[in-house]
Image (cartoon, rainbow, N blue to C red; front, top):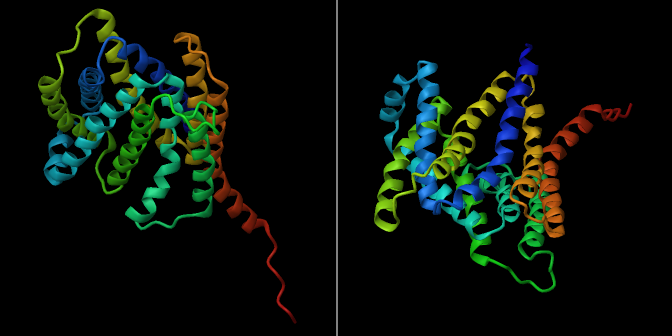
Length: 308
């Protein structure tokens, strides 16, 4: 199979799996508390990522990368999986899946806004415009479409969902300084984050249920939100002839997720969710496509003739 076709196979597999996890979160949270789910899912992901690295004969890189920058991996492990997933799963426990999903996708718009001051990157007009459009969608979803009433069903849930986007962006900004193998780095973060999760679980919660349904739900989240899907996406980007073609496939994930939420969870999708998600996706598309359009336009525009 050609590398470009293989990239689309990997990319579509990743997008499909990611589109199922919002539904999986809600199902798993019917058996577990957010902290219990984080524990089971992270433990599963560690086993999966360890198996992948063993198959790739890269397990020796774990010690090398960790000893090179132990403080770095301590920070990444605290952010993701510990803080990020505890906050995200708590948001899902308080909100309908359709709301939590839509709000969580604003991380893509927030990332360049944070990267500008933290990484000294240039903030483009398209980033600002995208943020205005996307966060209009956030406001519509948060108020349930009752914009004039300015009332929120779960202010804490909405706040946590938006906080999760901040944590996710900070994780990726910190990771721009990482020069190691990305799968090794992710496993190191999970290995370091697990003890913090376990101690917090013992001190503040109870041990998770070991019923078959509960374990299967938690393992599904660990495999297809945190572990295998991440590797599939990396393989898609690595084998793609044009990364831009693969990255735009992400827009399919929230749309497909809404379908799974309506079909499996039997949530009635509110008109405010459709409208708000349309604004959020429009902001994401504006952020990606506007710079390309501007660049292409500048290339095809004829240069002004010099006066004779």
